[in-house]
Length: 201
Picture 1 (spheres, one colour):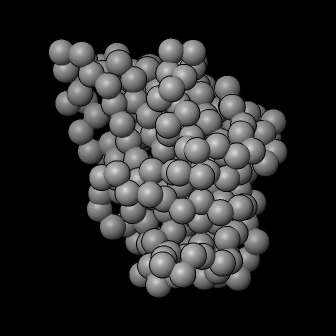
Picture 2 (cartoon, one colour):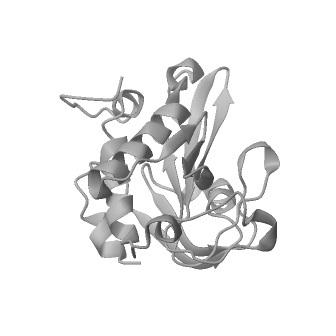
């Protein structure tokens, strides 16, 4: 992964600090363990995860040449201000892939994206609150990008961009597009105190 290329993305906060791990249990779990030492907008990336987590305690398979990342934000806002955020993140990813490659992913609300009916991306958001005030927000995204072989138990439900469209994709390009668009999401822009001319409604 070309980390310096990602750091040069046109963002103000997200991705200016990147923690890159070759192999880890989970970027999400690591972020939770290190939450007091992480800067606002930091991205944790991993080449492989041994026990990645999805929603409702499910596991998320992470093979090589995919995207496994968690974004840490310290918004200091009321929990109600984050309503609908996961769906907007899904829209960001859908639009990013379409703008880059002209390919349309389908959103399975609230937190999955499908390609030809199979899961290609999952989103996990987690907050910690104190009297309804958000102390931190972790956005974790797992996307199957260039994986061609999947374990037998998920072969019929999981796929990757490359497997469906027979193209080798640059993961850095996808990450940059996603984080640049994330900072234009109305809710996140307000929380990060970013002035934007357009945003996702």
